[in-house]
Length: 150
Image (cartoon, rainbow, N blue to C red):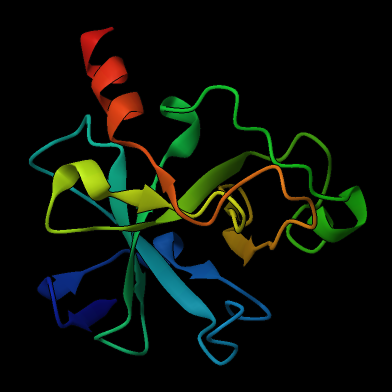
């Protein structure tokens, strides 16, 4: 599939990389088809991009949060997970939408609304957590620095 994007230009994406969000994202209910674009120049990057396949300008920076915050463990009711899972052993991956700031130390990540993607079925959903355990503006610079030292 040829994909026209505002930030990455025209790119070729294999059809099997398209992720379907049956109910869209909370603020974008009509956006149901996305791909994840990784930084090919930096394979170790914890950031990548969730790019809409239908709206070229709609792209979200997302972060592989668990690689930085190993204790991040959002509780999502099993009943809700069944929307994207076929069985318990499906390969689920958790991302969180980041807010990139002009100063790297001010980068935040929304821990309250994880984006969970089933790598096997290519289905995704963003969940809004009920509890107040996690913030929507969690600063991650210090954790990223710790990860680099390991």
